[in-house]
Amino acid sequence: MTTTTDNSPLLNRYNSYAHGFGEVLATVPAEAWSNPSPCDGWTVRDVVAHVVDSQRDFFAGHDVDLGPTPPFDDPAAAWQAHRDAVASRLADPAIADRAFDGHFGPTTIGETMIRFYGFDIIAHRWDVATAAGLDHRFTDDQLTEMETAADGFGEALYSEGVCERLEVPAGADRQTALLARLGRRA
Image (cartoon, rainbow, N blue to C red; front, side):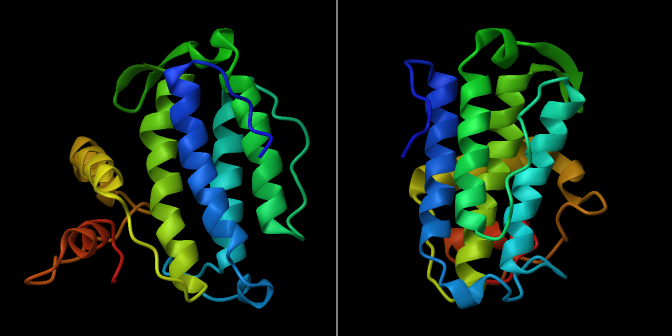
């Protein structure tokens, strides 16, 4: 793994999310990249492209160049190249600490990468694994983080194009309940 590392808690958190996503991508069989995902209308490859493209758009919107978009002929390699570009930018406090007014109020590029895009990376691990026929269980810490984020997003979580509102199945375990909150059927 060539991810940039330093003692920054923010960078370490991003790297942990990014590494976890990369671990799941590394287990996807070659024939599964075109499988339909739990995200309506998306393949596994599309989920990875969404994660990369949404982060690239976020950085570009803040005048931060991540370099050329990696080719998606190998989605796992594209993710690694993207992950390394993001980590190198987050290692620069002038970028990570850059303040702006976000959807939920004043924030920074780094905090948004952790609170929103980190959430996205964790959630899409399950989407990719499920579509590839793999079992993926969130850790208790990841479940807590995702539940806290979903609570913080409030009704914005159910905005058009974000998550579908589903009922939590009776007797659902914690992961199944969280997935239902995120518009996913376990």
